[in-house]
Image (cartoon, rainbow, N blue to C red; front, side, top):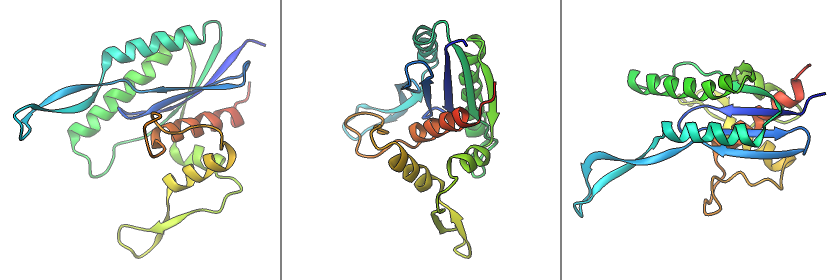
Length: 193
């Protein structure tokens, strides 16, 4: 059997990639590359206001890191398949889709076996055996599953020794890092050769 790596990708500019090395039994996390750009506005002190933006050049570097880290491995990838988001502008939806497409492309270039998976599908697998955590809906008339709290509860319960913060200085766990990890776990649990 060939060495293989299972990869979970939570797409978007603040997304994450989690890779599980099936030989070494280790996880590697890759944050999406960003860089600071000017917004065109000035701060009160006269300096330009800056914002974080997805960095396409950084994605090319990320491709090289993954290629080097898993040279000679079969790469199996699950990418969260998300559609347009309600409440977002057409520009935001386009930019999200554009970024997600570029992220998929790095794995196409690596010759990976790619699965697109709806959030409901991977969540149903990793939530097995857990009581659902619910919050009031936006109307307040019904209760809906709090997917972020559920995901955080699962990783704290099953993987208490893994740090899900974006950096050591971060106070909170990173939603994209948790989701990419659980997408990776979904793939490991369901993959059939």
